[in-house]
Length: 173
Image (cartoon, rainbow, N blue to C red; front, side):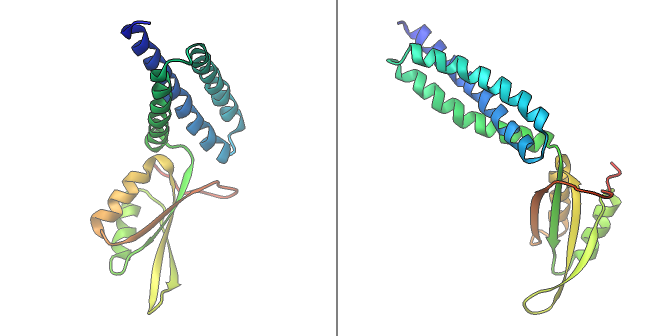
């Protein structure tokens, strides 16, 4: 084998793994969110790509560069899948915010940006606190966090993925 074919094989396997692992990440996120048909289609495509890559590897087991391409593709595919989900996120997130001094300023600013904000009284270790609770579209996550951090960089922020069951979710944008 010449150098060109070795490099082309490694590149093919790496690209195939980037695509199939990215799809696998998106498939799992859809499974968690209950989108079974989207998850099934993504899984079908993911496995087709994986089989093509594995077929090439099995035909060229003596080539260590293919294994390197496989491993690099897996790592890069994981990064790509998470990046795609963060950029084009689907579904909803629940955001909790605790700020010592800027609760009202944060709530007012978020409301002016058309986010629904609920303020819940809480009890901290030494005093009462106010907890801001938001349900937001996943694709607006970074906007919410940047807004909060501009007002209070020391605010405690917690983000969880949620699956709405029933009721109204405030989203005017």
